Image (tube, rainbow, N blue to C red):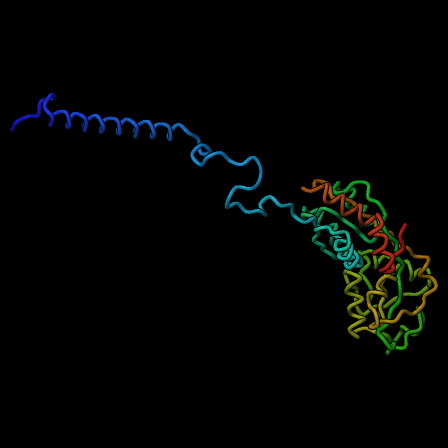
Length: 279
C-alpha cells in the first residue's frame, strides 16, 4: 500500500486532518480541566446578590409562631389579642397549676400567664421565668344556668339541695373559692372539683350543675347561658394575673412583643371588654 508523502496533495490533506484532530483533543482536555477546578457556583454561573435561589422554598427559615401558655379564663382574650395586634401566636390554655408544671418540665412555651401570684411563684422559684408583671385582676362570681332552675339565691341555705361545682383547691380559682367561703362564713359541699374554671363554667352552662363559682369575667363568657347571683363578699377576693417571658425561649423578641401587646393598649382593651380589671 502506498503511503501519502507530506508533499503530495493527498499527504497534505491527511496531515491537516491530523492537526485538526489534535487541536480538538487539546481544547476538550482544557475544558475538562477548567470544569474540574471550578466550584459549584462557577458551574452554575454567578448567583444573584439578593433573592432566593431558584427552586428554593420561600417559607424556609420563616419564624415560628410564639407559643403562649395562659390561664383558662384568659383563653379568649389571648386569641383576640393575637388577632387584633397582628401577632402570630399559638395559644395553649389550661389551669394555671397545670401550665406551670408543664413549663417547669420543659414544655416549649415562650410566654406564661397565670391566674394568681402563687402559681407563678412556683415558676419563679424553678427559674423558668423572671420578674413577672401583673396584667389583669379578677374576682370570683356565683353563676347559675339561665332561668336558675335550682333556685339558688346566694351563698346560703339555697345551696344545700343544689348541685354545686367549683375549682379544685390547687388551682387559682379554687383558692379564690376557698377564700370566698371563709369570708362568707360558709362551708361548700361541691358535687365536683374541676381543674380549670372553664370546666366549671361548661358544667353550669350545659345544665349539669345548679350553680358554680367562677370568675367575674366568666359571666360574660357564659353569655345568655348563665346568670350571676350577687355575692357581696366576692369583691374582697382578688386574683392578680402575672405574665412573663419564659426563660430560654428560642424567640425572645416575638415573646416580648406579645407580652408588650398584652400589657399595652391592645391588651388593656381586650381585657376590659372581657370583664377583667386592668392595673
